[in-house]
Length: 334
Ligand code: TYM
Image 1 (cartoon, rainbow, N blue to C red):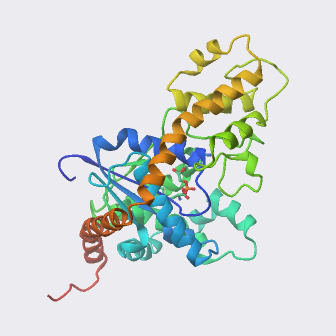
Image 2: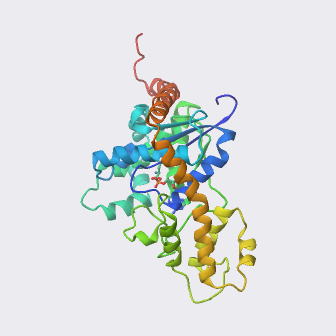
Image 3: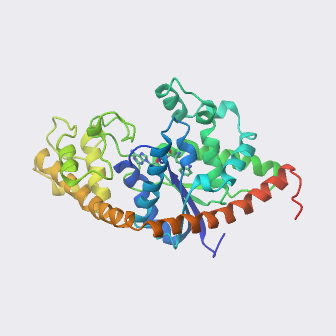
């Protein structure tokens, strides 16, 4: 524990364009709860290369993502915002944890199965051991809390299992982390197929709202969103399209589903969709404006990158040395 505050770690991949799902499921919660914790927010660029990347594009996206963290409201003086690849402890701990993780456990990971199906020509070992690197990310900082969307729960459970296994052999080395799932927005679905999660990699651009979409595009995508023929705005599993739009609306306005149902009683889907679109524009437009301002200030962003990677390295090394000693690596001679 640092400053008596509990520790929070989370990260996002610098792959594809961030969606409203990433924002409402993760980033928005990060901003809301960060004051209560000592926080580490990583741009997990090492995870990104489990799928083939264009190097220049990856570098650009990583910087965009780091800037977006700040634009969303995370103060880099108070939150350690850094690139995963700048802290070698992630890879070093991942190697050790690989030796405490079973093939059977990794075989059960649904994200691996999905990605392997999608990238059948490149099912590399990194894609398979991806959850171990994620466990290393979290355990490296003695993390108490990990705010994520629902889709990351299986990885988090595995992280806890690995930590418990390690602790049962070597004593209390790792803090056992808990997931933090927001009350609303934990699983935002595709606007074109509400049985699928909204995803950066969806081929249909109308299925996802991207954080950088301009207001007209956002409104247009909501107008095209799939609904149903019930003609009533109700928060129900039987109306998955409407439920998803209500989740988005509630996450953006702070209203409860019951309040929102009441507000749209007797109104048509056209009015409802427009209101949802406007609520999203209301949240994303200020974020986009701050992002554009920040990109003009290269020195400031460079300073954040430098200072925070030093801070992250300092804390990561503390855990890493402890773990290396426990497993029996020889001590360093100074
Ligand atoms: P990634 O980059 O796919 O997603 C980043 C965060 O966004 C959440 N999310 C969603 N939430 C609600 N609705 C959606 N449609 C939606 N899509 C994505 C994700 O749950 C996640 O919180 N493996 C992780 C990155 C990672 C990580 C970590 C996270 C690496 N190491 C350590 C936490 C702790 C991933 O690929 O997230």
